[in-house]
Length: 85
Image (cartoon, rainbow, N blue to C red):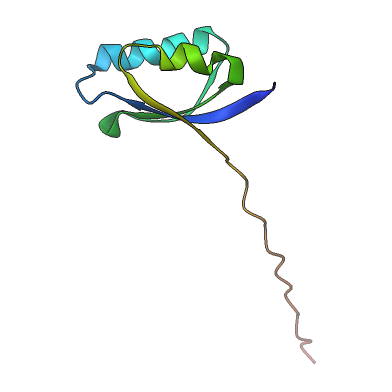
């Protein structure tokens, strides 16, 4: 399967070094960090679905859940110009 987005919740007792080591491990396995929130101990990552079990098996990881990230549609705004005459 192709890459998917996952939200990863990390144990609150995780130190800064352990948080960084989880990020490094995800990158080492070909994953991408979409967003990281160290204060909330949360990551949004893009990995192949086959790597989900490896991330779940990490000692400080509490939860790995799939999410969908879709771009917002752009609205077209039409502007009419008034003539100066």
